[in-house]
Length: 373
Image 1 (cartoon, rainbow, N blue to C red):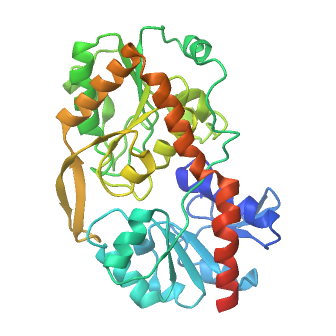
Image 2 (cartoon, rainbow, N blue to C red; image 1 turned 30 degrees about the vertical axis):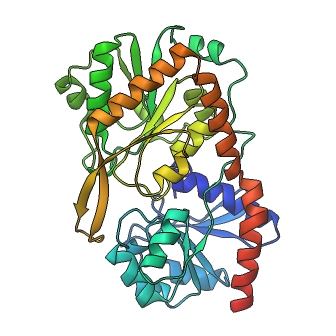
């Protein structure tokens, strides 16, 4: 699993902490280098499969070689082979992002016998409504790394943003088809920018992807001028050079951060931005509303049917609602409310401190799993 993805970042955060508790931890690669076993932070990382990108053709072998007691998967459970995972004691820490419970998830847990572990209270509720009793452990962050900048004005100046420039950010993987609602978010920003020409947008993502959006084309079609949207160096981004230590420098320079996807099992950037003291705009649906919190701008939308794997509904955010949220965020900066929102955002994020979650949730959960083996 690539360390610089959201899943990879969470794997790094929890694998090292579980190791420090005294557990013998190994990581099975999600996708990447095949036929190459490496050591990372004193942890063995076994290679992904050859015929299956998420390693369903190799995980059983590495489970036996490592003499493991349990597998904890961190991915969409519907992507796993229930037949393979039924052969090993499995905890599936999985996102839930559709209503009702995705058919793919329901089928996986029925056929695999795996222990369901929701990463949001929303997910646990949807599991329960689908007749599945799931435990709950949220994602978490090292709050000493994800922290507000000591001097936000100096950081903005170093980033090339003037004091009057209103900076919006989006950090999403541009390879999820329609789910991330990038056209809707950029359409809303285009409307906002027409009223506030001294506004910029940070797009921390790939500019183009076969499974995502051609963002330069979309920006041109929306009439967003050159020099308004900023992408990371695409080679640096693709190479995974930007780590979690660098992300606060990006979040901390923005006035507001958007994460208005159609669905999210957690949507980690909403938490990361708030930990850095940057308020967020999120879709009022799935786990996003929970992670963003009631103090954030939550935009409504309409149901969006997803048949493949899910047979359930997402929420397509209304463009005019995102635009209105951007306008209110701009007004909050003008009338002095923004500083209070920054403090509320940071306080909300502190509930997801990784060390506290380890102590209060992972330790008792793993004790219960050990007792059941």
